[in-house]
Length: 109
Image (cartoon, rainbow, N blue to C red; front, side, top):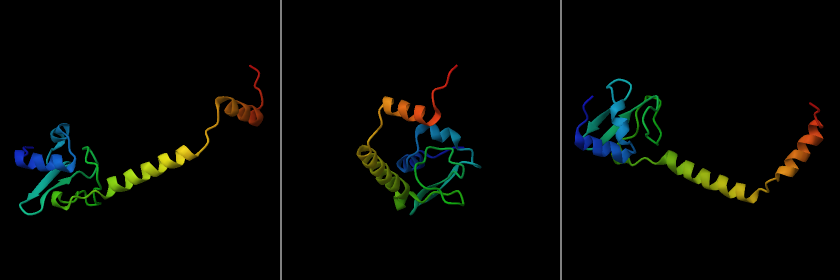
């Protein structure tokens, strides 16, 4: 599928990488352009590196909408997970070994 260079620029702004353009076959991965809305990606099986939400109909949001809902959630969730992990005490190898030995006993081979 041939992709106009102006459209490639807009698709890159959506988060696509150069390698993604070879995946455009006009069927399972394609896009459409609107002069006022920009471009939107059709990629129902997430073949490309598009990082945002793709709706159940297979289409992304329009490039002019600047959708960042998924990445906003993931960034916040990752930061919270790291914060909680730093607060959690981690057992030492000896503590893990002792706990396993207590639970399962020493196995003779």
